[in-house]
Every structure is written in C-alpha cells, then in structure tokens.
Length: 365
Image 1: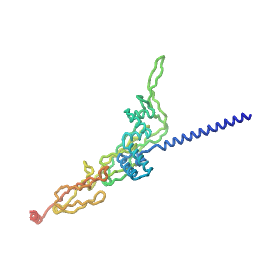
Image 2: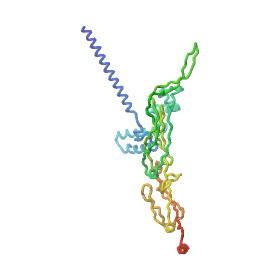
Image 3: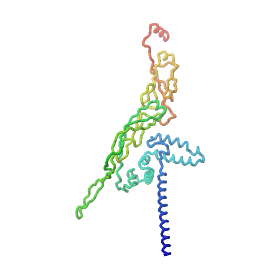
Image 4: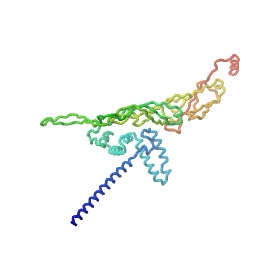
C-alpha cells in the first residue's frame, strides 16, 4: 500500500511538471510571436511619411532626419546612431521603386525573400518569387493568380501661384466607391482546378471544376472622402501625386490608386512660363511720359514682398526686362528660384492738342 501511494505521488508530481512545462512552452511561443510582430519594421513610420508619400517627400524626409541624426552631430550617442542606421535602411528600401512595391504588397518578410532571390541571380519576376514564398509552387510550377486590383483614378486639382511659391496643404474632397456589408452571402475566392475522374477500366477523363468559398455579402456605395494634398514649392504643372490604394475598390482584390494631377490656376498679375516653369511673366502698363523720362514702380510679389521694376532710361514699347531670382522656386531645389520677365506696354495718349504737338516737335526735334 505504501509503495502504491509512493508511485501515485510520483506520477502526480510528473504530471504536474509536464503541465507546468507545457504552460511555459505556450507562454514562450506567445512571447516569441509578439516579439516577431513588434519587430516588424514600418519603413514609412521610420521616415515619418505616409504610405502615399511621393519620391520627393521621401527624399526630403530622409535628408532632414539624416542631418539631425548624423554621427558627426551626435558624437557618442548610440541611440542616435541606431536611428541613423534605421533611417538609411528605410530610405534604401523606399527610394527603390521595385523594392518599395514589394514591401507595400508583401511586407518585410516578402522583401527579404525578394532580395534573397535577386542576390541568387535567378532572374525570376516578382510573381515567380512570391508564388514560391506564399506556397504557389516551385520552379516551373504555376503559382497563384495575381490579386486583382481596382482602377486607378486620376483627378485634376488647380492650385494658385501663391501656393506654388510658398508651398502648403489643402483638403481635397471627392466621391468614391466603398465596399460595405450587405445581407446574405456570396461566392468568393473562386478557383478553377483540373480534376481527373475514372470513367471506366483504364479510362480517365480530365475536366475543370470551379471551387468557391462562401463569404459574407458586400456591395458598393458612393461616399465622400477627404484627403490632404501637400503642395510642394515649385510643383510642376501636370505633376502627379500618388495616393496609394485610394482609387476604386475591387471586391476580393486590392484597391486601385489615386493620382492627383496638379494644374496651375490663372493669375491676375503673373503667368507661369510653359517651358521653364520656374520663370514668371508680368505685363506692366506705363505712360508715354514714363517711357521717355523714366519712372519708379513697385510690383507686389506672390508672398507680399515688393520688387522694384522701374527704369531710369527710355523704355521701348513691349521691351522685356528680366529680374533674376524673382520667379518661382525650382521644384525640389527650394533654395533656387527662377527669373521674372516684365514686359512693358506703353499707353499712348488718345489725342494731342495743336499746342502739345508743337511742343513735342520742338522738344524732340
């Protein structure tokens, strides 16, 4: 009896130890998964930009952070050095159009797979790489079909020369289709596969079979959405800004993109040069007396500062004078400016008296 009790106690202790071990293993796996999720990098957050940021916005954010975190400015600061390395790595990814596309679609792990296959020089396309990565097959096997994508939408937004001179942001409101829940269910994630069926001794038949899942039903409806448009100084006329996945939605697919095309509004005092878009044109009206004797004249610029456009010498009708550095900022070179070209139109008097004509003949010979 005593031996039996001892055996029972030992068995109980063994079971308790196994139970505690299983719980510890479960906790370790949970912690490891949490660490993996936490460790996933968000390169856009690292640079402080949105997923729809343009190449110029990413470049500008990188330059700003790189200057702030550079080791020469932070000697002995290990935290700054680590952030500097992260910023450089994030820019290395997002400044490469192909790698950015891979990262946007498949995340950091997909990017690692893409880089590894590229390094091996196997020359496979993105579809082949990710068909292997996500279980679509190996070598020459056919991968999963490409995810459908909604239509890309292009809209025009007119901005003022004042906005193009100083930069700024504005809210753009547009109607777009959105996917919302609906009653019932629907067929989804449909795939066609080949099925082989035996129809007799030694006789087989192949045919296609469509297989679908049952999903909650959805429908499209129109809603108003607001977006913030960042107008960069000197943005070129016709320049397109990409808003990632803000286009038309696609049921069981990825949304399309939105492209906003920036157009220059007409202005009461200035016109933008069509060829050299950093240059401005202005037409100044002066009297005949001012054209002959000289004059003083100030022009209010787009940001309010005054430019002296007068002359001491004779000004001929339709004469053009160029004022260096008084144009718009050059796009992505904000410390440099274009020129302003002023055309002078001389307003002649409608009539002269006989005495005035005589005086003019005497004065001008």
